[in-house]
Image (tube, rainbow, N blue to C red; front, side):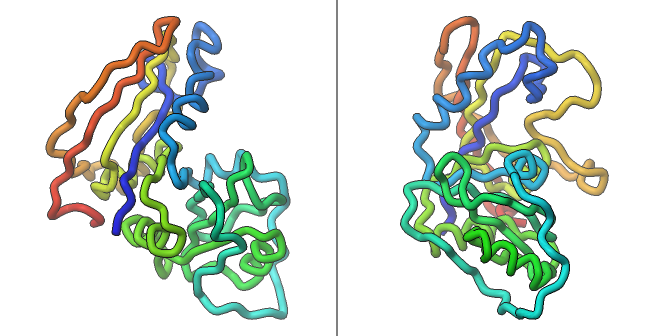
Length: 236
């Protein structure tokens, strides 16, 4: 069963997401955590680049005498919410087991080394496998639902992770916190992005319905859209 996936992002009026570049500074960025808490997800998910910003440790050792089966491993299953991070090839050394009190669950591929798995286990970081060499996002959602009971997931970027979920037809809802600020320069992160290889792929979105527009104060708006995807393309 697929969880209900809500993409939550804060953006300037020109669609950029790097708050430090916005002018005027700090225009509405503080609303993200408030809306995150209101939405009440069972888990939230970010990509490797964003995940690296939360890491406190160094890369794990490259060798180990231990071997581990390529099976899902959980340090905890009793949390009210989980922080899920896509890290296909095991690049992040965490130095922590939670983010803001939410236990970390890393999404890996089976190509990850035993040494990296040893590092994750040593720090009490849970992990799941969702592909041989590339992450299958639909499988990721299925595992999170089946193993941890995740029914409502907040997708919170960056742009590459958001874009991958969008192109796979897996986003059900977009909650966009639109702030009265501009970036105005090339190269800034955006809400939905892709690599070169995916630049010509189009998302299977067939309709977007504006469910509500909520003023948050100071010129900040919360726009809630329901997304309808082509059912034949979902998960591909």
